[in-house]
Image (cartoon, rainbow, N blue to C red):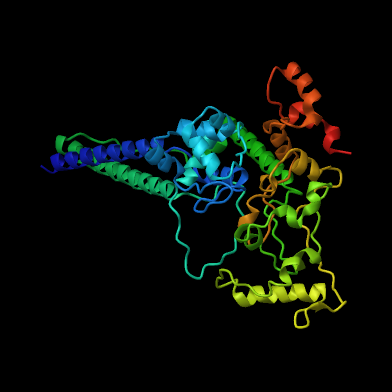
Length: 431
């Protein structure tokens, strides 16, 4: 009777384990898009004009796929066409495309033909995430974003937990099956042969010259891989976040107040460097803005921000009581964050004015940064990859007309990337 009970229990556990495995396998295969990758893509391509829960240059994008499906009857294919070429959708006479275009004052959305279907799925997965309620007393500081994902999502944790339970059940089932078989053998009078004493595993391994050789080669290759990875990180300062002598919140200035990056970094439009804004630029506003009235947190209080404004007054020599300059300014020793090697040439005006790139393309979501940090690795491979994927904007740009006509015939394409225009030539970036 006990044998039957144990056999039934073992079979039930095995069936339950199989059902759990199939269920979570289906859930895993049904999941579309990676929100962690989508957040990175969103920040690099969309954050300049869109927020998830607030209108900016464009509409809020929280649950945009579901909202368009429910309200307008539009599917993901329409969204993909809009993202890759919004002007083409508008010219086709699409009713909703023209409606949204007119609603936002005829502001043309940048085309992103380089985004793959997987990229778009990842972005939509990020926009579909539920808004997180801000924790009380939490700091408003936006810390460094990790180079890879930001950690396991809730769904991944559930799947890992379920798999752990599943393997535990399987291990228990094997133990019960083993005990049942031994009892069955005892009942039938079957002798179970005792295990012969074998050579210890480490000794058998040491005696096998082939395994020793393979293991040595494996460790040699693994060591070489990790040493190579270590040296490849030398000089890469991604995530560098120094503390400045005067706290400047890009989140407040570029995010909450919507100040254009090029208002402070005006030389980015016309020169090689973006430039450090003079204190006179700061005082254009802070002659009147003498206290902070926005949102605060446990770490960044009103008193903290007001104290930083007083540091600005002291550095610029501004006497707030008399409303005039004292004539005794003090230099501010700003700490440089983004610093390319001397042998690498980079021209801001060529990228900002000629190419029309947004600052967030290289510097990340600065409008969310309480303390500025280096968002991109700024490595040679990172720059080359951008040149290979970015199309040159030749429309209404006479400078590229002749070059575009000749190279279009050469490559047999309508759109030219920066790489096809010579963006991979060594002399373009190196002296």
